[in-house]
Image 1 (cartoon, one colour):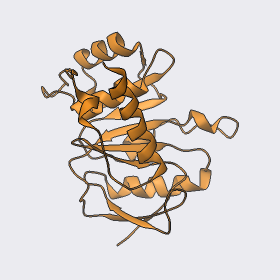
Image 2 (cartoon, one colour; image 1 turned 180 degrees about the vertical axis):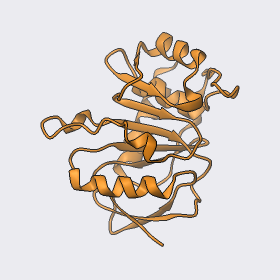
Image 3 (tube, helix red, strand yellow; image 1 turned 45 degrees about the vertical axis):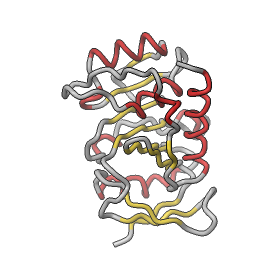
Image 4 (cartoon, one colour; image 1 turned 60 degrees about the vertical axis):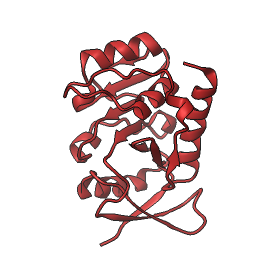
Length: 196
């Protein structure tokens, strides 16, 4: 994959996490030449998710695949292109398909420790769109005052879990949501309030 595409994809990740709740478009150059593998449900991994996995993963990182993302084709493709260690236990990176993200997933995420909070997982999750029914109010670093977002396909109970984790900061997880070629970041430093 061309270096400029990887560099721009990495900048997209940094922008999404530094401006929580703001949608960031993945430049077209980032997906050029990528042929995503087939997932367990017969669909291909989205080009944007494939590009981000290629950008973030390497031989030093660990990844756990959930649901349809966990197929022999996806595992082989990622091992070949990145050398990543794919595990079935909590990992540095967690990848979820388009689905309802709920507390059953969250219970197994690595949160880091008081001595090593940076070991908390980065969770990449595909969602259908950023126009869901449950509005969230965000505050914290990278947000001037507050920002409202709506992420489709995430169970309300998951947001309750995420809000409860704020008491553990700096432990916790960083979230990257993908919809089409757009990304939205929600780092652990962001304070979330679920609005009625």
